[in-house]
Length: 283
Image (cartoon, rainbow, N blue to C red; front, side, top):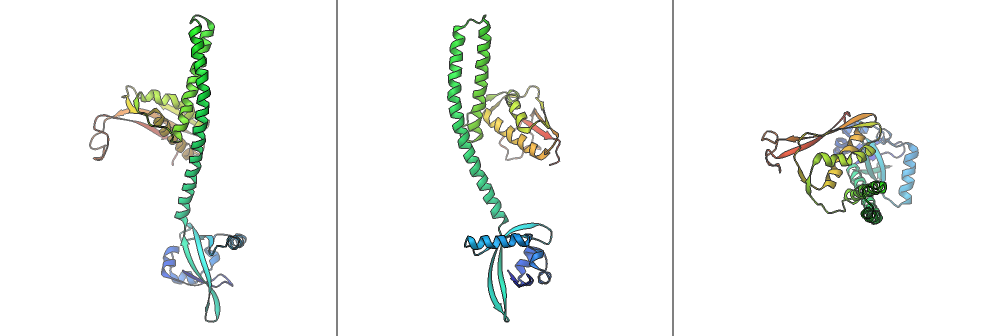
């Protein structure tokens, strides 16, 4: 809580909670002016006060600077009080930084949900068209002899359509709208199948290096989950690099021992493998 002189913005008094929040003593706060705390310009403060009146809010949204230089988003509830023949502002200040961060995360999740619904609809319609292309290509292949030049062209059409269907299948999975279907996979082949898409994700400024391990064990996993994990890792790496750099993806077998695997690990010893990604970024 703060007691403020509205004529000059001087802090007349503060309680211990306010002193602890701002990171200085009560005596220090009494020597300060609100302009030293509020990071908004006078024009921005006037605009916020006008917006509060327009929205019929009984509080203002400001951004205050703490003693260590950190800034916090605040809600300031103010009301005039008479004290010793002078009108002062009695202010109750709430830190809403964490609340606003949660709200932003919630709004982002809503956006992703909308994108997921759109992706699912696009994938459904596109798969219907691809099904027709694949069907007619298979029929045409059955009617053309393998020795004819047209047969090779039809195979290319069929392979391209099947690959397009595979890419389309990833859309609902990335939107988390698809059932998980684990199957025995060769991890190296699964990674190789998505390398082109990963290179498009990270852009031309980042060199993607692929180092497949020799003799990696087969895994039981939905291939789309691998796509999701790798895409998330690569996007995070791209954002960390933020310029020119290198991203390395490699696979290898790993034997978990008691010194490596925690006691709560779901992986039994001597049956695990891993893939590893590394970047040139410092983040």
